[in-house]
Length: 180
Image (cartoon, rainbow, N blue to C red; front, side, top):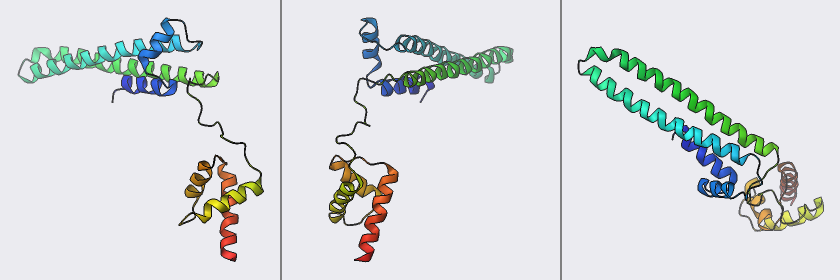
């Protein structure tokens, strides 16, 4: 996958919408995201550099094929196209990194996408005793008690716990089952 395609997909993933939709919302002025116009300009430049690099690679390939067929006069042309390819690939990488940096800036500005964040909890975090009671109920329905199965069972009940708390609960449940 080319750097330009990867970067486009990354932008679409981070914004939660296709690039065409992002362009339409930016053109109509519906977006209040200050990073989006800059990001779209950079993506346009990256796409152009990608097209130029593909063209330079085709030219290099054609010149190389002619050179291999015995036209040694073309050695300079092969070198010229090879230099173009290297320069364009460096430029493409630099432009892609600039887009990635803009995505990081967007995160730093705390500009979440339009999609609801996954971190929102369905229910407030229960206290330890309520959590342990729910965990016991989940564990009773499990064939094998492990961290992931317990986490899934608790999430199915709308309970989201940190890895640290889950480990402590799991340890208590295992101690209880060992003592019975």
